Image 1 (spheres, helix red, strand yellow):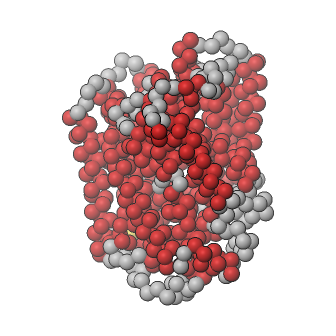
Image 2 (cartoon, rainbow, N blue to C red):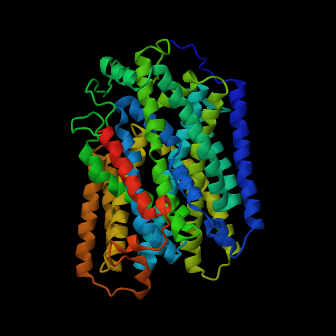
Image 3 (cartoon, one colour):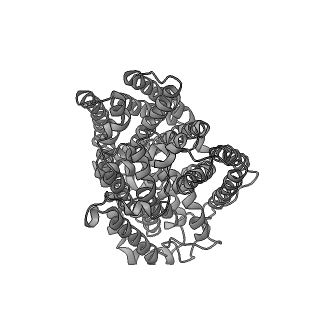
Length: 567
């Protein structure tokens, strides 16, 4: 039986406040460092860190931009309900990161584009650039930043023991937390640019992982190891089984397995993941400005290729550090480790573990890590939004703008993006779980973009008209699917919906290419592969694990092995 104090101590709050001050200060220092060491254009340093990033920083920054409080809260929530199955969103990412390293990163780098919409314009036309710019801004502000702020605010509410309707100084507590976190992140991102983002991301990732390791290891040891964990899960009823209206199905024997059948309560059968995730993953990891901007800032092709592979190696960890704690919490509640207490809802799982499992001091450290996860995701999204607006909107229509003016536009965009994200973030309260909400939105946005990039890179004949038609038609289909889901008219398997939308977009683009053929643009020669083996013959590789081909093979074998163990 455990008798940990489940309240936050003044020491914990001191740690949290000190962290917030330190991370904003680090971002400001990065801004001064950038201005002091600028060589060449000011804009290149503000938006792309002067193309100086090496693979360790790229990998850590990509990992940090992806990992947010959403992972800590929602993956633990999903695991408390359904086990390890939602860990597929972490391990499947490894395969798409290999695609980024092998096929997309070298094209992005050798074309020296500042944004992915710029890449589409060079490959196809300006219409495609405009569409992707709008979608990328929506993704950065709503999908990346909005959900991160909402989840971080929810965590703070839980730590403070406040109810959802609690008011502070007459203001809704949840909204107050969203505003404060958003403004703090906006300050250091506006002042420091991408260099501030990658500096703070690298530090915050370490802090985040330390906090996650402490919770996982402590819970794992106290439950008695893997064998005892598995035995407890199979031999005891689920702690939510008695909750009115619970959808939990317990005792199927696969709570620790990644592959599920069509009848599984999670709604994620193995074939849905196999068909649907690549559609979401290729867009997110290979074609989304917020994530890929770190690769665009690489100092050479070797680092641009190895950075995503390093990130892929790090993606092994979240299943054990973010998903497994939810499963451990189930077993600990079943064995009455918390004197009969349990999370009020599955969404409170991680906060419950934090406040009940950790001693004074460590609670503050882990809480700071959760704030770090939200702030680093927000800062990445704000910087990518600033880059998109400066280069894809203003620079396009006013090509004579100098770098100083572009940076000023980027800073204004950061302020406006912060305000829009604060307004949009409460919308995620509409969904059953936050993790479900973010992935549903992605499943409606990703299919046309994944289609256009895949065919654009690997099919020389693909035309600009067909790409534009596919983007517009695909987004329209996604809006219809979103409307049907939001209004509860039709709610199917969102992973399969993503796959069928992708299939429809492929048909549209191939058909319209033959209907509206266009001559291949000479300037697009650097943006395609004539043969899929071509990128594997690059001379940018090193020796051993520094050879991206060897490292890719190792990554693929590791993930295949993990799936074999947890099948």
